[in-house]
Length: 252
Image (cartoon, rainbow, N blue to C red; front, side, top):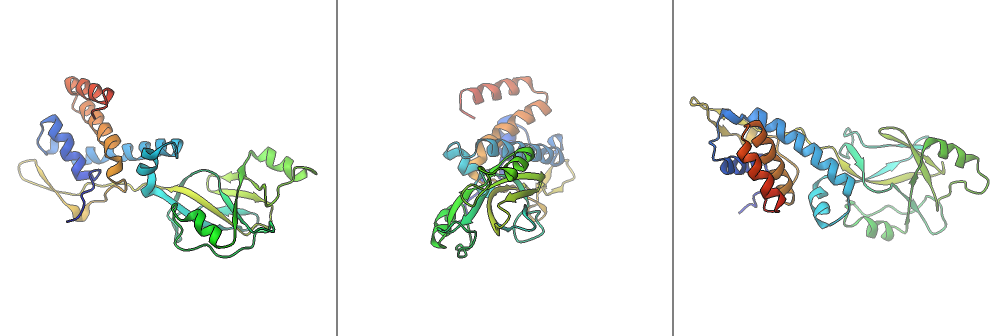
């Protein structure tokens, strides 16, 4: 029997309507619910990125979005994934980009094991005969200053970089050939698929649904946020008060 993702669009909607003691009809339409969920997904992912890897809950909730890309250095910079290649589109970097460096402090070393995941990342790099050195992201002014420094010039042991734009990072030393980046990919634009019925109700249509990539670990914050937005949309002050109280007590 397949495991139900409690964070799915249909499951969360049913839970919210059950608490509100409302039927599934066009009073709270799939269109409005989908808008609410897209806002919630984006805000939740932003908050998880800010606090990653603060605790196990944060790690568990953000895991479906965590990706690792091995990006070649071209003309001294790396282009973060835009979704047109094999890697999903970049949203936010998690931690610092890392360079591959062998024991002789050059950028050449063996290929890491595939596929790279957050779980096997460091093991895979070590097995390839490499070590990992973090790229220190600095302002452009400091980057330019360091290039002129006689005592603090970037090395394979202490590489630096700066964002040339939102998706491009300039890297030094310029002899580096590839950079490993752990990042959060962009969230999907969700859509709750449904079939309208003559009595203003509707039936869930899985075939036209674009569902969440969050899994059951993220049910609590998603459900809490949906309850808050639903009660505000319904202008139900009593439900708003109950929701706030239950969240304050840690019950929702």
